[in-house]
Image (tube, rainbow, N blue to C red; front, side):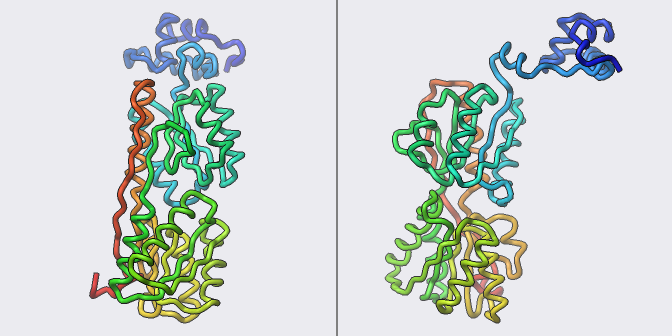
Length: 337
């Protein structure tokens, strides 16, 4: 194989027996005949030629990459979002680049600064925390951005969010209709966007039902392991007749902790999660869960970003996805399903 450092468009063209312009078209993903495309790619492979993506992006003014920043790539709700966004942007000719930023806003800020140097054409971000510094970076960014979740004050950006308050009302109303009166809550960190919204929804839903018996425990994050500790702490305080959890990972943790303590689900304790991910249906019993429209949010966010890339001056759009409830065996007996 030839030395890649000596492999140029000229050498590829000579090897393929085509013009330099034809090589350039193939390498830039522009239309070319199947015969020319095959010959150029074969010649490039033989010579070890790899196009300079940085130089190409400077030339054409785009990278053909869209970045997605989420807190935890292991969370099933983000996996579902990633798949849907990838499906939409790939059809439009973009590659999706995934970044797991964790819950520290500094990592999100560092990513945003990096992307502003020209490493992506647009960004879809789902931040768990939105401090003022992140808001400042978002407001000043040259990059087209769509936020999945709450916007920081003063940020005029395309936005898609769930209605967690309405979702929590669905969960509490369902449990109350089953005769549950001691409805506890396992939340994630309350200083996060979803943690604060779901706590507020829980308190409002209980107040609307006139339910005064309430117990809340905040897990250190939204993971299964954190949920095990939080659920154990909750049950040490007493045994409620229902537990609402801020996501499905926490719900599965609560189910397992309750089961290990000899409690029957749903006879002794009913459990409801949020996000309605695949894992909710895989649990035993399957977990009733509030669908906050993760797939719909992801699809809408991807389309908003593509619209923004095509029409930079288009009016800002902010979309709210309404929740639904999927009832399964963790909150009601099978004969009632």
